[in-house]
Length: 89
Image (tube, rainbow, N blue to C red; front, side):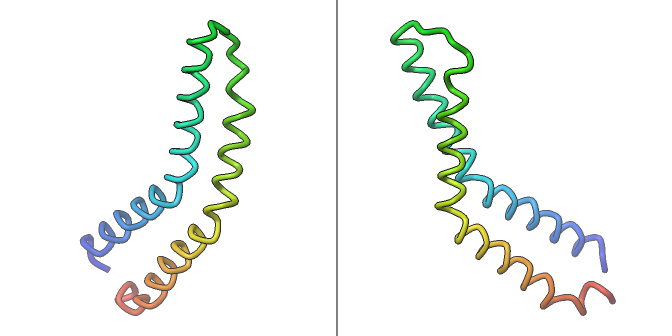
């Protein structure tokens, strides 16, 4: 295995990880932004108020995106295992 191949695998791994994590992170970001705006408008400065909606939203995004995430990870694994002969040379 050459250095270029190893770097390509690492780059693809990081990209797939970012792609799979994106739905939950974006959902948490949006819910946090909405809660922060509501807190600013109502002047309620409770720090723990945003945790429960964020947790629920991220869990819902995880459940909704899970089939897509599994499909992406299985495709990536199949590509890696399909090219396994190239890696051991």
